[in-house]
Image (cartoon, rainbow, N blue to C red; front, side, top):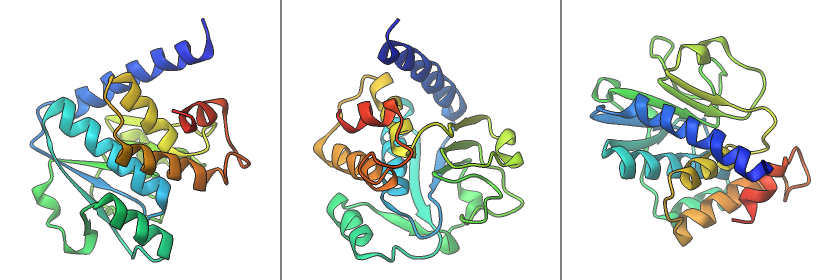
Length: 194
C-alpha cells in the first residue's frame, strides 16, 4: 500500500468520525486561535466547507484577539471570509464548538473554561488534557500545518477544491512550514502540491 493510499484510508476514517460528531447538530462554531494566522484561517475555512457541504449544518467562524498582520488581513479580504469576534458571541447559540489550529487549555484561544470543544483539529505540541474530552480530536504532531490535516478531509470527502480554498490551504501550509523547510512531513509536501 502506498503512503498516499494509506493516508487516504486514515483520512477517510477521520472524516467519518468528524461527520458522525456533527451529524444532526443545528449549528457549529468554528474557533481559530487568537490573532489567527493563515494556517488557522485556512483550516477554519476548510472545516466550514466540509461540514456545511456534507452535513448541512450552519457554521460560524470566530476568533479572539485581532487579525493583526497585513498579510493576514489581506488573506481574509481576498477570501471574503466572514469572521466574528469571540467576545461578541452568544455561546449558547452554538450546539457544537470546533477548535482549529489550537487545543482547549492552550491559552491561545477564546474557548471559555466551562465550554467543551466537541471537535479539535491541531498539529501543535503538547497534547492538552481537555482535548481528550472532544468527541472528535485529530491532533497530529508529525504534521507541519493544520491546513494539511484539513486538506486530507476535503480530499477524503471527494469535494472539489475551489481556487479560493486552494489558495487558503496552500498559504496556510506555506507559512506554517516556512515553504516546507520547517517541520514539513511527506503529507505536508503532498498537500502543498494538490
